[in-house]
Image (cartoon, rainbow, N blue to C red; front, side):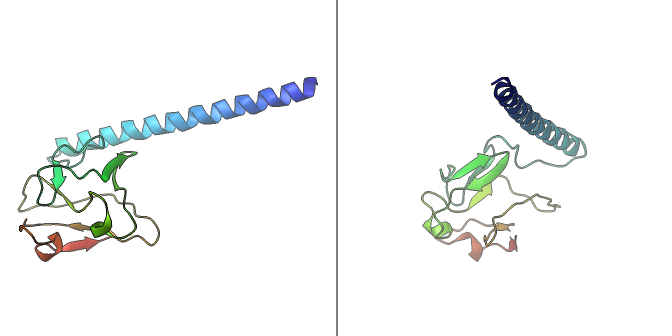
Length: 140
């Protein structure tokens, strides 16, 4: 019986240690991201996404942010329907609410296997027209 209690205690302790390491890693990643953003801004870069909210972002040809877009683990994500952006409930394209002319753009991306995503740049909002008719797209 003592062996069973001892093994059970070790199992619980191991689980607690693993859980605390995972949380520490997440906090460490968040701290590293904040440090990178601060360093980039000191060098004159403009950070378009703060990893926390949609400040500066809105839907294409809209004044609000489509609700299908969320922030998960510091990344922008759409909760799609699997039918493309046209099939996403309150999805569609999003844009940054500031225009830029002469710029260098760097970004990190992640897309699911078999996913189809891209980044439109130099977009012009044309009422009643999709974004791809007025903007080149970088496929990821």
